[in-house]
Image (cartoon, rainbow, N blue to C red; front, side, top):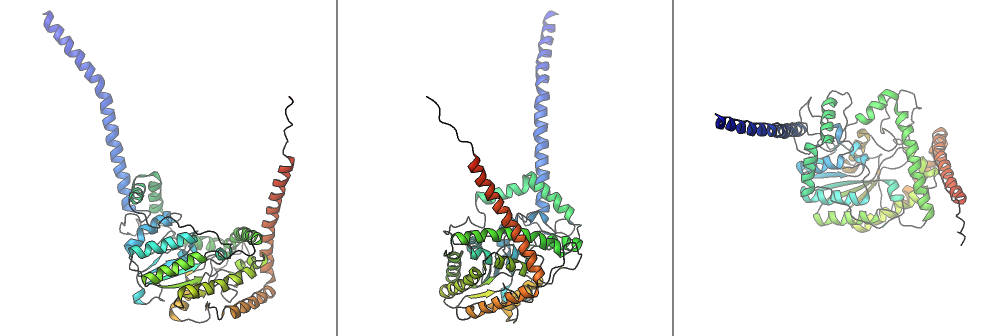
Length: 439
């Protein structure tokens, strides 16, 4: 009787040991299973919603038609959209292009389509060239429109350093796919996308690369255009005052971006691609700040040098256009801050023109429309500069209140800068000096 009892006791102890291990093993197995299921669920949701256009999921109204999360992630989204679009025409530049130029415009002829808007906020000279290089690599591009920033050209030139590729390949592409499927940022963007389907003011990118106007339309309808103009006046004054300091320190420096322009033209000529360059439209408030900061002569000089550079590099085959200046479109008065009024006809705020003005720009370049922009060439740029100076002086006399507002914005920035510099100098003078140790 004792042996069976001993065997039974041994069996019971073994079961206890096994049962003591099983709860932990079961917990670990269940945890791994739940984690895997959650990851798969998150990945499936993110792929279905595709908040950044990375996966190419079909657009469904009420689910993922509007993608507000692409705002701020335009480079990721457009790197995925461009190869799918396989455009014949590519629009390149900063957020001005992204907001104001419509790939579906009636100004395009059938051979120009499809058209893709590759504008990127804050695009620099090297990134502009990188966008063009990769566009020509993955798409049958025939035509390119590059919109240049007047202020960026006024800056003193710096050595040209190539930018990273616009398109992501290899492991960089794999990382993009993983981040867009399994990260918390992607999950948050998916929920943001789902909620945004019911907004009255869509924002983010369209599949053709252009931005919806909700980011501008909503605040304008709620508070009037003066609010956006007022906000931009402060930031523009800061940026222009900084450029003025740079130019003052290097008054004879070459204008910026000329090397990019030469390389861009050379690349398009090698590929047999038609290219047009255009100085971007800005509201007169922006130009008033340039004048008040003492940059008007530099601006006119930039136009002359750029016209000659394009003529030399393009061998007469590349066209340079200017939509920057004092004219009936840029000098439309801005309602006072706090006054609820309709948006301006051509501008959301000083930096960004509306698609309605973009339509006029495209019709000028590709349909021969008159009275909006002008073609800059070495032979006519001098006369055009004189006409612009006369238009500027006329605007100064006709709209003194607008000039006074810009003068106040610039004076505030200059006073703040002087105060900061004074504090730095005072701090340096008052810094305690350590007495030498006695030996």
